[in-house]
Image (tube, rainbow, N blue to C red; front, side, top):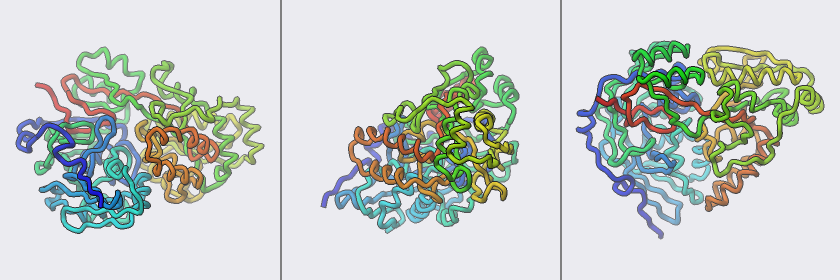
Length: 524
């Protein structure tokens, strides 16, 4: 039997941080303006950015990611691999507690993993490779695998949408189709339910019993040190109001300033504009594969040719090409899997109209959803719907607030019964780095992200990607993924844009990639 001890607590990261230091360093209130109201509290129930930010504050994960997206033990002390990679034994750190005062036990984690894996692309693959997931003791989590799965820590440490958040078993037993509305985690901040005011405010307080792991903080790994006693999220739908509030010191951090406002913010010495997310945001146009006309792949392909990435990106990010990229495929441009395979220039409206007619489109009404309170979603929707309309599609543009948009996006009924045909959204570029957690690239039908595409060919290629041990060989599969994606069209890439953030001068140690509320502090 082969036995290896890997990624132990002492080897994972270098320095040591003790809990008493955290209390001494805590400082007052951090006031944050998120990109939308927090309407979903469940980490696996929405891909909204704001739910992800909330989840990373309240919950912790078994592994964390460093700035290079390598996994390290987080809630676990380490793990042991046995039986030629078919048995993994993970050991929880001692003393971990949930916000309700209960200890974190292995059975809580087992049920949390099972619930998360129902909806997450990476989790689904991990569980398909798992024969048995069990908790032999309060501190041991055991995976018995059907075949080796070396990316297990990557799966359990993913930091983006549908993070594998650990919660008490009583909450994790909630069916994944039902939202958990009592967010109890073991992370550095505790959600204050009594202070939540829909459309106005969300509040958190530092969790005094949080035990940081030793080491050096990077992204979602290492000690998640809360230097603020409270987080207060202020919901300000109007960007001009948010910018003025930042300049006046009424808020400390403005997540997603409009690009038109950046010159004014940069001239203010009290404000820092920071490009903290170099991978940017990837625009997505999503067709509903369940209902006509987009259940026809020929119509999906013809509609894709009517959509112009450059026009979409200029509308959302301005004229400067330093802020956006067109000619973007299914992976973020910096990914080793990014390719130009199959990327064709957009067609003019008349040519696109003829292509749609030849594909079988006969003037059916297209219900196009948008969320007016999300600048990114709404701008993409306005431009894309106009491009489809000019190509001859009968577009019914349906606008609503973000919360209702989220609910309707999950409805599978036909459009005339409250469903939809097409919508726009966007994801962080990091989530579209490779096939592992790429929500938009899945083709697993009813288990897929909203739109529910079915593509056995993409799924088979994805399985082969996971089975390929060599990183260079996996990267070389990028063009094949893109070719299949442009044939089956699980989504249409809408381009990539950079989204700087802005915060008050004096805030330091801002985490990279996304809004996180530990490690950053306010200088004296």
